[in-house]
Length: 162
Image 1: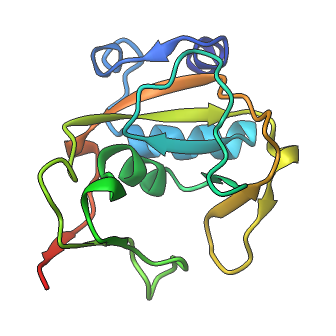
Image 2 (image 1 turned 135 degrees about the horizontal axis):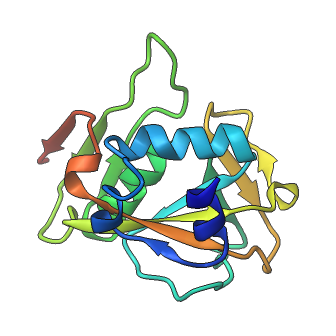
């Protein structure tokens, strides 16, 4: 697949590239890449340099097999809120929705990035969730990235002030 080859070679798929690949729903496209190529995703508001290693946070790195979660992490920053709340178990009864507690300016970005992790062997599935993978390896490589925009996150967002 030309799109996958381009991304894992380290190129960034920008929003303006979507028309060329006939992408009308980036979440659907990302979920297809996850299932077809057994990759994981990592969303970030930070523009991480090409072929960087995924940084450990308190000894752990996190990834997902759910494009909606990756897009959420790419667009919404927990650095500007007391909490970003969303379900750890997603199914027919638990749909993805985001609750932002005491969100400040900067919590919601206009764009972000979903990074591709092609080596799943360094991750273990977190059985407390339906979508999270955890690694303690410091050398997990981010092989490519996809630019996402706020309108790519199609789920309800609720701001809560306490």
